[in-house]
Length: 448
Figure 1 (cartoon, one colour):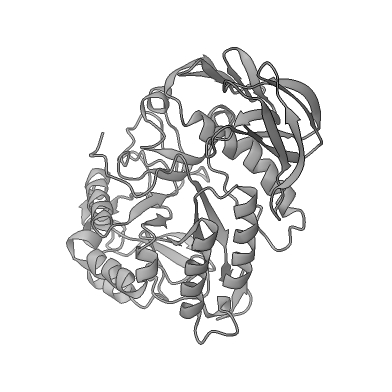
Figure 2 (cartoon, rainbow, N blue to C red):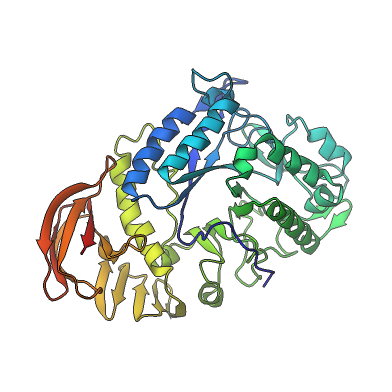
């Protein structure tokens, strides 16, 4: 395992999401397609804070720069002017306002950037060419490995990017330009994979060493890096997909950035041994590419697929995902993973305190008593003392066990995007509570 950095956040206890802000218009040059302005994004953040009961949330903005997502990388120095508020002089002013206002709602605003991709419309593109900091083919020509927004996407050679001093120059400029983002203490670096260079030849291992240096440098600036994947490269990993198959990592390779990157958007090809022996406060998701693990460990809900202006039902969907995915993730993250048993989609994980999670049926038991069964649950809400979240997608009526002692009464609230609504107060006897759960309704139960 690499040296374990001291991170600014315990990502196993936070909510980590993205917000899609903008992307370049495909058919209209030099125009940005806006998904959310800074002002619109803040309105969602206010409501999400009420749904999530004020827990710490980190939002990475996608498409905040230039014309939007995947535009002009590897540069990240100008704010997308299409996102600004009418009352502000510049989009930079609006971005700074947004980041400051979000703090009032237990929300940290940061950015989704990229150290890997390079486009020929980037202001710094020629600097990368001159520094030999782009991946080259065997014939010495720079290699456009992918294509986004109708443009060829080249890849940076991490070794040359680092050793030339260009990375330090670029990142120092970013920190100087956006001190309020640097102060957030976290950034999301998209697609931070390693590629082989062929002219001159640079191995995956050399690239990984350079990536490690880049992460350490960002850390010295007081900033954590979260990223897209669990990075498990080797020299057998091709630069390009073969026969249309994905450029895939394999479980047999070691996790290269464990201890350096605390959270990935997608956890990727982790072995059972790695899942058991890597505590979530050192490395967590996100979600798993292998869906069976999402049903076993849950994770950070992505959010960006729900928070859209065209989604009139976003609050109901968000509450559902929060209750059935985020809440069980935070609950399980409190306990030590002991062993994974079973095969295929019939897996179970044993945790300390006699807790077992089952992938089949998405069931969790505690002391052999069911506390989650599919999309019906009654789980401790770990962010508040003597508090539980109850939810059922289809509706439910049953008696649940309470694990705290000496409970005499409870206040029951309905969770909504406009705040908690007190429904009733009830007496509690024998550490049990009878609950009628209406379909798609989340309750906060506060015991006294």
